[in-house]
Length: 169
Image (cartoon, rainbow, N blue to C red; front, side, top):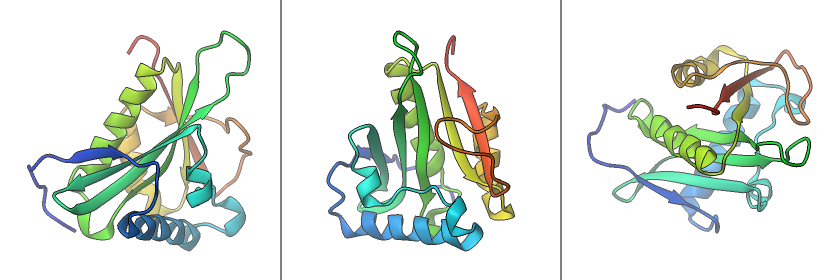
């Protein structure tokens, strides 16, 4: 694990998924999800899933090194005129850049996008195994609280669901 680095991060929107470093990080992400959860409980998106128009995928770079990625999925409002709902997806920091602030910077940017879009809340699904505890701790620091399944998810002992209300924040 690296030491914190005070140099600024370059947060980029990626719509092409052509950089092999991004593809490798997404492979690492999927492999990590499958290492800690049974296949039927892994809800991580592959490249095709991330290319959907309702997904905004961000990467965090320092100089020419990819540190992390994350995405926000725009969920459909349950009724017309209702404020939107976003879902955090594909949060992953490269193994060699853990604990350097990249995930925090990405989550901050993803929440800023959600606020710009007028979402009433942002939710996420992640694993329940001990390996997910650092991510859960970070989400709690941002104000996320446990919730039940949302969108098309179902209760699953291998999943944790969290949400953050954005109205008035």
